[in-house]
Image (cartoon, rainbow, N blue to C red; front, top):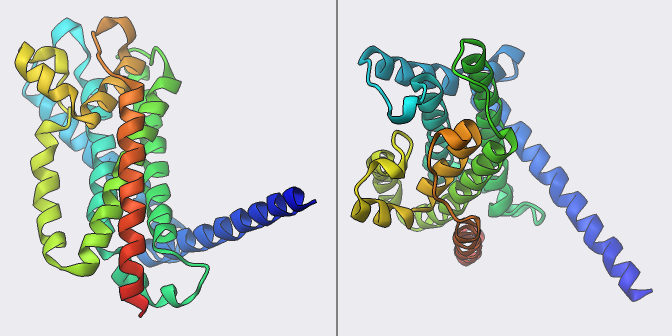
Length: 264
């Protein structure tokens, strides 16, 4: 009986947190895009427009990629996930300040606030990537070899970004220097992320160093799903999962440490 009761209690707690996150998600949508239906379109239009703009710049240069990789598909699935990563991390610093008054409600946690923002950006990324992939397939760049592998890679990147976002939010609650540091740091990270290159294109030493960057591995997984045997990829799902779990635990501990200072 006690076991059944505890299960019902746990299920009830999950339902409560689910409703809290849903409410925070809607609040975030209304705050950022207003209550007009067309405002929500910008959630998808912005990453799509920037993704196609960056891709167009690469196409204009007429740069040829190894192994006959179609540039359109390559750069679209490179920039759009990175846009998502950048949005999740950069917006983390403002999460606490914009929702500080909600912390006086016991059911609302710092983690809930960040999860709502992450889900919003992650969902937009998946939708825009799907549309971009369909479009590149229609124009003749080929269809994905394994769409679910692409989804898994993007989900892992969303999770990694969320872990970093928790640390950024916790740090920003203590000092505004974190916010000032994060924005340029994310831009510096772009050429190291794997968004615009494959690890196999690098020399052995550089490729070995890049292997330890989990985001590079996530891009390798996404492109494995897109291009399959047309390219050589090297990634370790266990390594990426371990890295994400460690980041999540560190992030949760950091958020728990700063909450008392915010509502005290």
